[in-house]
Length: 228
Image (cartoon, rainbow, N blue to C red; front, top):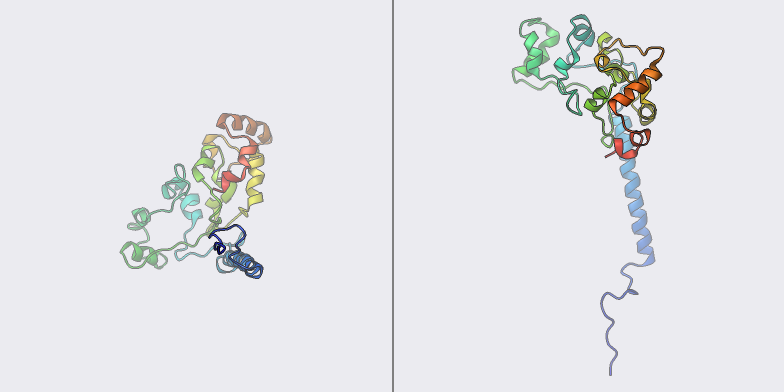
C-alpha cells in the first residue's frame, strides 16, 4: 500500500530556509533603525527645539511684557483652558480683536492679525515649547497641585519676545517629580509671576504636598505617569 502523503501543517515542515529567516530578521532590524533615525533627524534637524534663552520670532511680534507686564492682562484671558485642559490654549483671533479693533488699528505689525481675522490667510504661531508625542503633559493638573506658570516658563511677563528658560527634558521633569515640595506654592500664588520660594520652602512645601494630596514619589516617577 503506497505511503500516505505528509499531512499539511506538520511541525517539522519549515516554510522559510535558515538563510531567508536571517534576511527577514536583518530587514526588520534595518527598518527599526531607519524609523528611529528618521524620528531623530526630524526632532533635531527638521524641527529642532529653540535654544534656551533665544527669543522665537513670530509673524506678529507679540510681547508678553507689554500685554501681561505693562497692561496687566491675566494669563487666563488668552490661555483660557489652562486651568481645565491639558493644553493651555491659544487666543482666538476674536480675543485679540477685542482690543485691536479699537487700538493700533492701522499698525503695520498687526496686519497679519487683521488679514487673518478678515479671512485672508491664517495666522500661525511658532512653537516655543516642544514635547515629543510620546510625552503626556497636563497644564491643569500642575496648576491645581500648586505648580506656578513661572516655574516652567520663567518670567514671561518680562519677555518682549517669548523664549524657553528650561530644557523640559525628562530628567528636568523627574527632578521635580522626585521632590515636588521644592516648587509647590499656595493656590493664590500659582499665577504670581514674581513668586520666590521662601527660606523655609521645603517645610512649607511638605505641608502643601499633604494638602494637595499629591501621589507618592513612586507614582509620580512611574513611566506610565507621563508616557501613555
